[in-house]
Length: 359
Image (cartoon, rainbow, N blue to C red):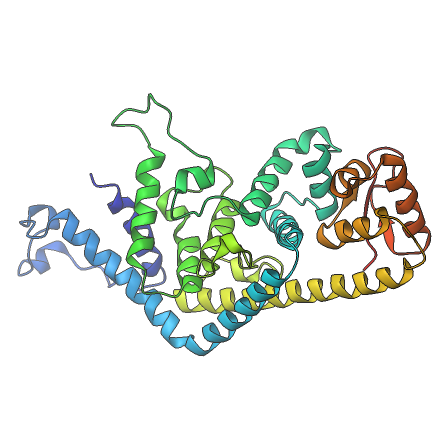
């Protein structure tokens, strides 16, 4: 059986919900109707039926996009502004936004990892709680993929880090088959705008059988990358479109395609605005910190200022590596900045301390 049939059947079944069924009639009164489908000749091949179902799905999403064209253009313009802002900013800004988005996604998915703890784990591999190492690893994957790496539609297995075992066999449940179904439909939707196509891909994720590992986290990260796929990512700019920064409303999986796309656009618009405001706050903080730190001399203060401007949290070992200064010089300047309210220590402990800009 072509694996596409199960994939398409799930999606078609969703649209059948709520349809009223006809009143039951005795079978002997329906003598004039054709027999059951099993007794009818199958004039259409499975491939033809699957193609017809795919066309119906795509038509629904294209109609949804057409009805929301004005809102889509507005959100696309807003995402373009964020892309240009990141292109002109330091490289660390992309990592900063990736940490925030991944942490917000973790709250929506139930892991509830704060940006502070996530950055602490990414830098020092400290979990704080023994049992949440797996959750931190999942969110750490999201940070890496939201910061860069392979594009999902170019090398899907590498992007997700998922591969079939060698002994699956022809009858086993193969990730390659399930992912091929999803990628085939995404390729057929090339006429959709990347933002709309990302929304469709997110909502078809579970129907393709791709939700066993990481479930919606993987789906959201993949969709965020696809939504921003028009920009020349390798040269800077937006790697992903913010989805969770503006709240979880855009990720709710209820309603017809038009409702889902509408919430998606609203959520992405709010997330993009939040990202822009965060970058504005960091720039304002950097200008204020530069003024306050004018009396200081040497290489370490301006280098430390750059590190704190680019990265959301900085530990002493990390600052030492970024600035090229000695550990003593780094700790002395961090203490000076903390005393003047420019930075805050976020761990509240004596060891493995980390600081952030007091925005």
